[in-house]
Image 1 (cartoon, rainbow, N blue to C red):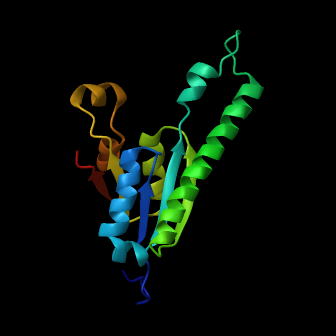
Image 2 (tube, rainbow, N blue to C red):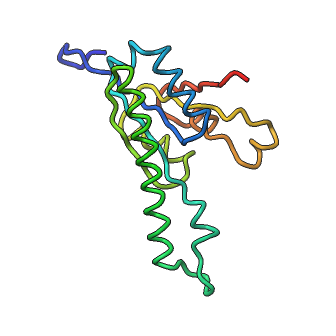
Length: 161
């Protein structure tokens, strides 16, 4: 890719991970199968800290969030996200790839697309949980949402069973 001045501009690639086996597989698959592309790109590893725990666990007897519980849950989520991103970054380093890490809080279906747009990535890579139609109807599909709403190319990596 070239910018307007004829200089080579690095492509930006983002891999979204969530700690599941399928996202780990997608990261490994991308590194092995797209190594040259990823190694010559700016790579971002992204994870979302979901807020579903707050909906059920973060309400006091009066129906309002308890500040201490909110703080404890946020700290646990930050630590888990940091550990997940550090592990992914180490996998990249093992393959000679430099990666930046990014995290956000919210609904993965929205936050992945928002981050991809904000970072201005050209390729978004994520794994597929390969849920059936019923589970997908109740839980939704992050990969499906990203395919239809991301403003960049999306690669969904399916793990063979």
